[in-house]
Image (cartoon, rainbow, N blue to C red; front, side, top):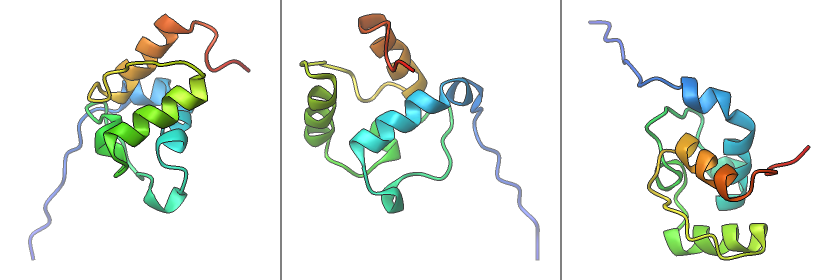
Length: 93
């Protein structure tokens, strides 16, 4: 039996924005059973959950109470940064 090591991409940017990323995942997929265990800096919201993109966009628009027109294919940490550009006070305390 050979022991193969799996090398994951970095997750440093994701870790720095862990709270905001978890919030976005909770909005996109409220059921923890269908939420990811591991995220790398390369993962987008579309990679992280199985929810249809149109439904994710609808849920985000509802949460933010405005049409966000976000690029859901961005890596999650970049998506967080984009939202903070649009809404600097997000997510608040």
